[in-house]
Length: 149
Image 1 (cartoon, rainbow, N blue to C red):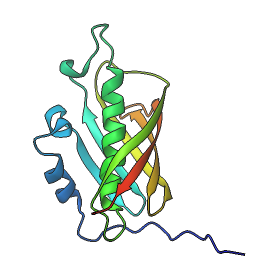
Image 2: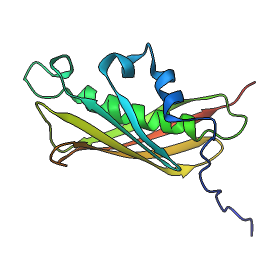
Image 3: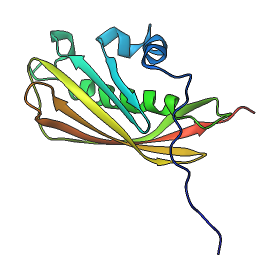
C-alpha cells in the first residue's frame, strides 16, 4: 500500500509580517487599509477599519470588502507557506457564506491552512466584527501553486 501521508505545513522563514505588508503596497489591500496582524504556522490574521468607501449604497459593508479581506489573508498565508521551489500561486476557487454585516468599526479575519500540497492549498477563513466578535462570513478558497517552467 502506498503511503499518502502529508507533510506538516512549512512556514517560510524569510516571510514575515513586514514582508507581507511590503507585498501589499500599491495594490488593493493597501489601498483599502488592510493589515496583517499575525502570522504563524498554518495561520494568518488580518484586519480592516470600516470606512465609507468600503460600504455598499445601502449603507452596509459591501460584500466584496469582506471577501477581499478573507482572500487577502488566505493569499498572504499561501505566500508564507509556498513549497520550496514554487514561484507563485493563484486563487482557483472561492466560496463565501455571509452571516452578518456591520456599518462601522473594524473587521478581523483569521485564516487557517486546512490542506497543503505540492499543487494546491486549501484555506478556511472566518471574518468577524472586531468589537463584538459577531461572525460576518465563513470563507474557503483553493490556491493553485505555480512552478517555474
